[in-house]
Amino acid sequence: MLGSKYNLTADMWSLACMTFELLTGELLFNPKKDNNNAYGKNDDHLAQMMELLGRFPKKMSMRGEKAKKYISSKGNLNRIPRLQNWSLKDVMIAKYRFKEQEAQMFEDFMLPMLSVYP
Image (tube, rainbow, N blue to C red; front, side, top):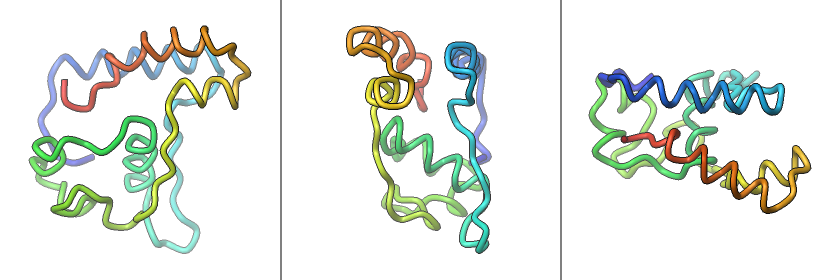
């Protein structure tokens, strides 16, 4: 989305997304376009990623050829200013009714694969 180069570490990201989908039956990130055209699917996808994983490291978020289209020089999204942060553990407990210990174990397993700048 940002126009950055990537390597085999993208396969780990894909594995995490597929693992989540196999476990829950839902997509980890399911971006949608705003009906009022305030933002597009890529904006929403980046927002969902930041809400779950935190702000991107500046080095990573500014290096893609399309980065400035989506992310300000301060690391904020240009079209979606307010994010609602959730940890993966909290999502698993609230939405999927995981027990706290199971949710923590799942988060511990998943987060290394979801590193935005491995």
